[in-house]
Image (cartoon, rainbow, N blue to C red; front, side, top):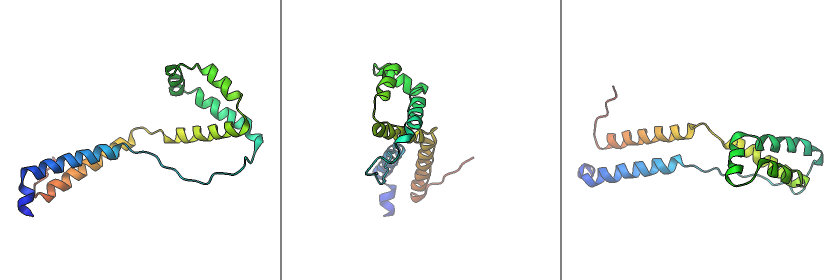
Length: 133
């Protein structure tokens, strides 16, 4: 086993695998599970849902994406106003998830830290010294 670790191909494969796992690990997806209600409970929250959707549509990033897709923010808001209460509530709950899903690059930093630790572990397994000054 020690002679295999000293072979040049093992080092190349280990570095490529560490890089691949780091790249794939930094591109994470979000999987959510939950119970879906079988009926719409509160029709009186239309004003609250409308306020959530309107504030989401007024954000700078969403407005720019709408313009990129050829939709004016006014047209989008007019379409939202014509929605029924159930669809509006569903859209408002999706805007909450979209706002919660934004991050400030913490995931990328965590991925890079894991990659560095993985490289150090591989080097230690190959009996190499890692000196940080």
